[in-house]
Image 1: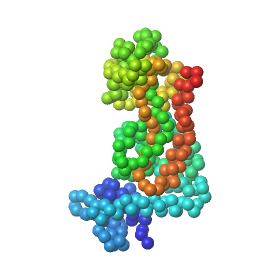
Image 2: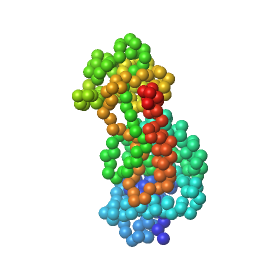
Image 3: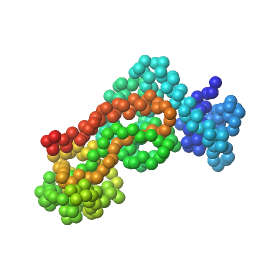
Length: 306
């Protein structure tokens, strides 16, 4: 019978191209990891890995074997958990990567309830605004609000990512309220770096405005806080500003000119014929938790009298 620990090690070596690093992730010394790989190769009678003093790479047979090894591990995970009670099925470590602001505002507050449901599950959350390589990093799930470009990944929608234009009451009192997108050219606009072009839907068609301002940042919370402090007009996601909108620290403007945006919050995971129970549990819980429409958009509905 094939050793699942050896298979798991092989998959991690394929992702990291480093036996020592893969072994360390699994609590193995470099020597023990190498010995386990040797035993795996001996058990199937094929060399899977090229080893040199400088690097490790898969043989052609190793490349062919890799997707099957991944499927075996997922199948084994499902088979092992299927004999347990419904709640105890979800066990092990769930490794998640997510954008910094979204993680702080919408993941961490809900994790306690999620983990109460599955006491045998441990969660490791890495927060980064850089899109990481899921396979190399060994992540089960990535939360993203960008278009999926990797065909080896699968994306499940968790919630809409509605974006609006807003500003603080103080700024609007001092500088006036723009009544159409072109009027933004007369205002100080605060942007995420590289996001100066704002695309609007208008009665006459699409309209793009290249905004300008005295401040920009690579962090959504920084842009939001600059808006709260009266520095200028901002474009932001409702999930990052719903509490400030509710409190009156920010006011939505240009409601008759919605932004052209089809953004969503996605749960992304490596492609496989089968989805691990812990991954499915996470997606089901958080998509239900956020709701449709998500709870952060209900602030706008109440303010708009809907």
